[in-house]
Image 1 (tube, rainbow, N blue to C red):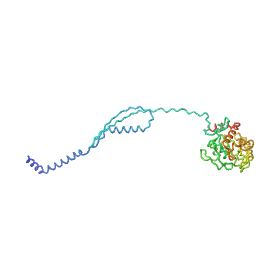
Image 2 (image 1 turned 135 degrees about the vertical axis):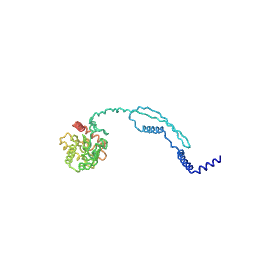
Image 3 (image 1 turned 45 degrees about the vertical axis):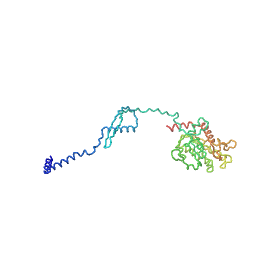
Image 4 (image 1 turned 60 degrees about the horizontal axis):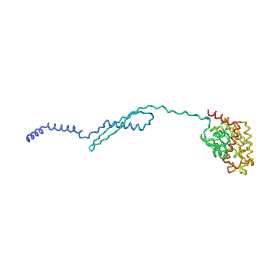
Length: 342
């Protein structure tokens, strides 16, 4: 046997063709078997793709707002995935629900008809301190816009008119009113532009305490008439009340009531001379003065003998509303609002 093997080796290696063939065959064997030495690529089952798709669908469903009614059919899918490595074998099971939906549009929501207010010409509702015993007090006070000086400003300061109806400021006078601006919602405006912006059916003008040393009684009165006419030109359907200068306390350092009454007398004559149902004079002085002293009543004084307290404004409004009841103010206000709101 040994001799036979020896002879075969001599024969095989003695012929150069056989070793060459052996080498070639070895190379082919190496290449053919090389893939078996590499770790096989892990294949992903179709079930895993199903799991991923279902997870995505579930996530999208959670983040989408439901606005329609849905009828649903649910199918449960259970997939088991086994992963193998050189060191471990692990199995995981996923249970998912796939929902097929059929959406049907809901009918539009029914809304209740909006009812118009009983008074469609009513002005905006404001909070204020009510005054007056006239049955029309609230009607007047809802619409009342005040124009004037620091005494006129008290109507807003004490809460008898809203801020949106206040065109009055401290130290305002006939001679300097062009220097003042008011922002009632449309930006800073002068007195006349502010009055036009509000476009109220009822204005009350109270200016004069700061003009006593700047004008004669007649000059003052004609300037007040011009102010009323200018507002009427901008709001042609308005009712404008020009109030007299209020009285001061006895012994007041600023002026005396004789001078105030002289100014008021001229003002009353000039305003009444217009013969207008829309521009009226109201004698505020007589509403607040003490009939014995003809000075400012002690229960209306604001502390400095010149300005007024809260009860004084209530008294003025009470007298003003009673006076307006004797005029065509209600009819004119209603006509203004019907025309303006159409």
